[in-house]
Amino acid sequence: QVQLVESGGGLVQAGDSLRLSCVASGRTFSNYALAWFRQAPGKEREFVAAINWVGGSTSYVNSVKGRFTISRDNAKNTVYLQMNSLKPEDTAVYFCAAPGRPFYLDLRRNQFDYWGQGTQVTVSS
Image (tube, rainbow, N blue to C red; front, side, top):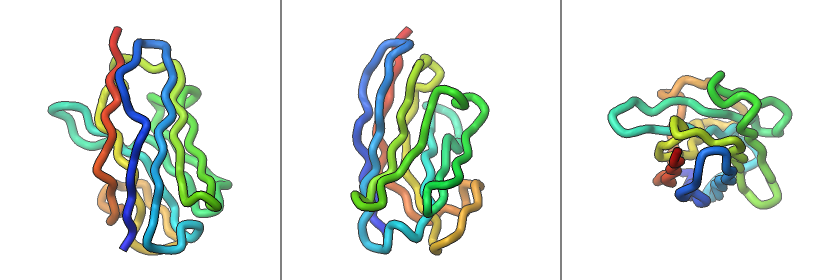
């Protein structure tokens, strides 16, 4: 089992920045890819960003490229999502997710078996 706990959400104004954190426990953190998803009210949960197990490869949804950065600190069992130039359309609950097996990364939502409880990000205009 992998336990994921997110933090760092909040209410900000358009153009502000936030950094989300996700602390993982239960398995060898450095062997697992990690991702961030988000879900806005009335919408499906969507992929935001992912990082492989060594941190050398990242992927982003087009709408956040150039504004968001995913990173990880394997010594702290933590993955981060730095969000800059936030827009009202970024408002959502943000979830940290991990696949069910190590050394594996597929960006499809159904390939992630472990999820955190989510942290709310609200961006006002």
